[in-house]
Length: 70
Image (cartoon, rainbow, N blue to C red):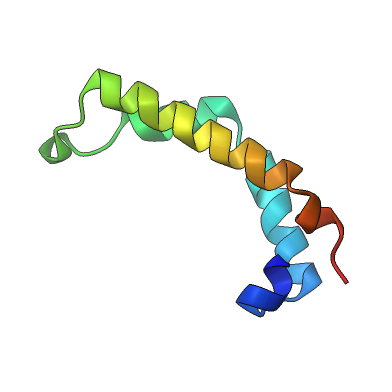
């Protein structure tokens, strides 16, 4: 379970999940669209990054272990 591996309380995990759930696809797109130019991230890399972040968000929020905490 996440809480036993990370030593977070159920309340801390639930609060983090609420914040994660509040992050919209639009917010992710805005964040990925505005990195410093020095990072030299291409548009293709930005698209892949948005897809990755959205997938990770959905996986974390749908993880059965998160809803079955002690």
